[in-house]
Structures are given as structure tokens and as C-alpha cells.
Image 1 (cartoon, rainbow, N blue to C red):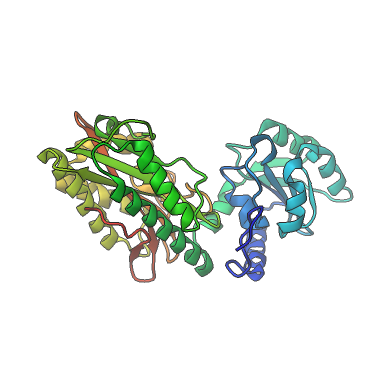
Image 2 (image 1 turned 180 degrees about the vertical axis):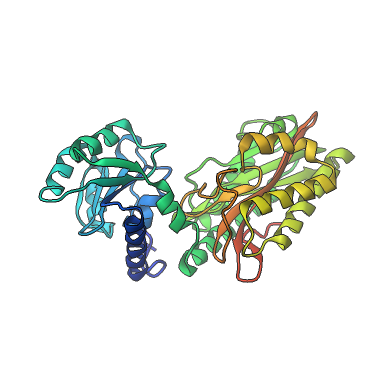
Length: 387
């Protein structure tokens, strides 16, 4: 296992797989009539850039953008901040590394003698204006076309090598959950619970680049809850949500647990959520659409009698009520409806699915696991108990 700046060892993702990714990208570029693709990522949404360059540097906001010059014909160039240029030249699989803040002048140089008429660019929802403007001015006359769906289409189905890494990420998520569960006792603070979970995941080889969540009691009425010095009380529900990754492949898992003897209404809701999760796991199989998965979860929740505590959230979040794709990014395609309703899950599709209720006077709850679609059904990569 390497130290220093992070890249994915070639015994995990071999170079021939990166070459295949490049071929697949260029096929879709030909389909979309693109001469050039500018692949953007940053310190938190790095999936597209790591997928091609196999490199992610240190998270310093002003110095951790990544932009890949990926032509239909010719060699690629990796742009990043000055702080990360030296290690990128050593570790990235793209050896031509240049400063992203000078991208305008570099693009003028790279486009000499070439005609880039249709230029796609990814991450149009997060690319900084300075970099977008540098691309625009560095390629005068080119039509800039939002093209995030091109890479999202390829990344939605994982390779067998990616699945192996994501299994490990799931194991690390379970290690964190089980450590948190053991720590849950009346009188312990939420800070202590999440610290114990994060320590266990670190010791297992995981990273914690995203915020982990823990909440208890009435604050679970909200969908987001953060660690605090609040003390766990006997007779209440506690939810722990963890977002570790392993070699930059993510896991997104969450559990609700009862501390001591909780009121019957709360206990019944927690048990129902666990039953729904197990029932959903059995339902998943190749060929189902995202809409079918969402509607099946709706049926399960109605059958348990909790739709009034799920329906409003489902409409508001437009798909996150079911879950979202997971991979190099914590949240990938598919992730919302109705845009993604027709997305069909295939073997090696990986997504997080959840069951959560909100709006009770006493709070709410959430379970979440990462699901791998297999050739015959589905397999939860998080094995921690729902009970």
C-alpha cells in the first residue's frame, strides 16, 4: 500500500483497465460528435478525474481542482493546482501535468494546428467560473457542451476490480457501525460515538473524507444531524451514518439503534424499517428500472403503515428517498427522478438504498446500505444488523 498522494495501486485497478476506459470514453465522444472532452473534478467530487488519471492530491481548496484535457485523438494532459503538480507528475498515469490556473494559455498551445469545434465538459454544476472561462477563452470558436452524462453512463456499471474495492469499503463501513454500536450507552456523548467509529475505520485502512453523522432523540426529525456534546439517553433512538472510502471508492451506510427500552411506537418504527430493508434486498435483480425500485419501496412502506412519514420526503428529494449510485463519488447516477426513472440496473451496478421516516413528535430514523446488483439478484455490501 502506497503512502503520500493517493493513487489506486495497479494491483487493484490494472493499467489495461484504464486503457479500456479511455477507449469507452472515446466511443461515446464519437457518438456525441465531440472533438475534445474537458474532465473536471475537485477535492470532494473527484470521481471523473480519478477514473481517468488515477490520482488525487491533498485537499487544499484553492489547490485541489483537476481538469483533464482528453482529445478524441492524441494524448491527454492533467491540470491541477501548483501545490499538487509535483506529486501528480510522479504518481498520475497522465504524465503531462500543467497548472490549472494557466489553463487558458496552455489550451491555446495544445490546440495549435487542430480544430476543436465541439468540446464537451463535465461537472458543469461545480466547475469554477475561472476555469470554465479559461477553457472558453483558450479554445475560441469552440462550442462548449455540458457532457457529465457521458462519464456517468460509463461509471454506473462497475468492473469486477472496482467491485472488489467496494466490498472492502463496505467491510470498513460495517467495522465503523459495529464499533459505534458497542459504544452506545447512556451517558456517552455523540462526539465519543462518532470518534470511536472513525478510529475503527481508520485502523481498518479506510479514509473519512466526508462528514459522518450521529444524532439521537428529537433531533432525528431533521434529515441531517451532526455530532455534538449531547449525551445519549436511555430509552431513545440513535442513528449513526458513516461515509468511509477505501482507495477512493465510497461506502454510504447508516443504522438506527434503540438504547435501552424505548417507547413502543419508536421500537415498532425501527423494526419496520429493518423489515423493509431486508425485503428490498430480496427484491433487487437485474433488469429493474429505478422507478420500479422506488415504487416497490413505496409499496413496502405503505404495507407497514409509515407512508405518511416517508411520502413528503420522497417527493421533496426527488429520488434520494430510495438512494443513489455509489462509486468513486459518494453520490453518483442514478440519483433523482423523474430524470433517472428509466435507468436499468445491471450486474455490477452499485447503489445505496435507504429507508427513513421523519415527522414524528419524538424524531425519526434511517437505515442505509450499499447494494451490489449481481447476475441473479442483489447483495448488500453492508452486513451490519438492522435490529
